[in-house]
Length: 556
Image 1 (cartoon, one colour):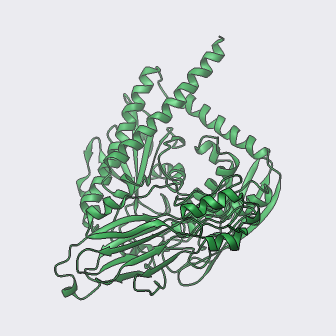
Image 2 (image 1 turned 180 degrees about the vertical axis):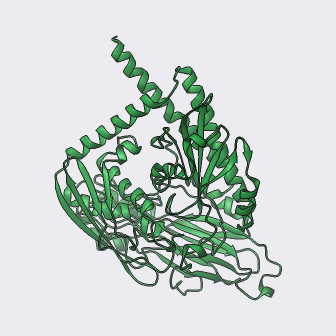
Image 3 (image 1 turned 90 degrees about the horizontal axis):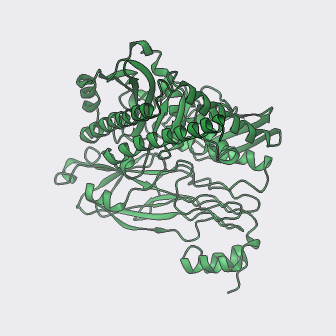
């Protein structure tokens, strides 16, 4: 075997080892985090960066909204802390929505890594903490100042010593200080784990720097993405998507241009920013728009700053996809997690018959609270105080050759939180949680089924729900190539009345909360669906006999 072949094999082994390092970093965070949305649902990200702040590898565990925003977030620290000022044992932090991951609930933790006295890399990680003060996990604020405590780019650990003063400010402004402290320390620890493993790797392979390896990774990744783009037809395609909004209905407008080995997605003409906290900062918009492109065009290419550089984004400041500071942004994924489907709408025209139907879109974060301070005190005098999060997941759109996945988060990819975990944290209990019949859009390939969830209180006391992220109640996921829309979402009191908007509502002591998640759209003409699949859906309780007759012409 030639020296060149051996060198190529060695480089690939080091690349794989680097991915293993960041995966261990992510697993460290996953296993030590206090918040259930991180520990159980995997709402996090972890990555390693070269000395210039370029993301060279990411963990498989995590969400596009975290990973892709962090691709650019690390470099922002250098404006405040030049690399020359950094020391071993330092750690830096921010939760700035416009320079981080899009809202205050995500702390970006960055750790410089030294081999001896030489700076060789950075590790960064983030996760969603349960409370940062302000109005909480709610879209009711009219500015980011009301949404919680913003931590600018600061040093949270200096040469191994924790900045207790900064930590005390963060915790004093949280309703759940124990959980938040646990998550912050877990982020720091996860980066330390990655740093130790990286130094072990560099010593094993006798590397004095990562520069050569990083250049190879980024060059090859960019090359792979550009080759995939060159195989596409050139042209321009547009797609409009109506959204529920908050105080008014909104429109997401996307235009896709493919030319000369590069792709540009342009959201010019999208609605002006909402007065409430559902706006998606540009960093978050870029994360999910590019994810949608890459998922279809180059899913096999590693995700790093090299492959991401092949996609350009155009937005208008002051719109729902590029709100101007201090626009409210807490529930930014209401807009952000619709972006992949808007991009798919363009790609479906460029690549007919190959792009899945629309999905349920944003996950429904079930932010549940005791009703203290929201009702007369005598109603909560003996009630336990609590603040917990669970997840409501809808269905994915039908795909060419496959049905859409049921109750699966797309495009975020987060998991769910077991109901047993939530029930041990608070007096609430789940009266029911099961697939929702006839929720997946009809098609040759059926849309993914959604679910119905009902929650009540074991105590004789009311509780509260923030409906900030409940969407597709008015505009369902659309089908593709003749497929039918999925079912609309719904949220109501168990006694029957609908929740009117994305506000915060009290559920009475003798009442319950009922949510029905949106289903995925169908793909292809329903008349082409195999009869055996229709009968299997009926047997599984996913499709009623009545709907099968109406949508599929079933005669059984």
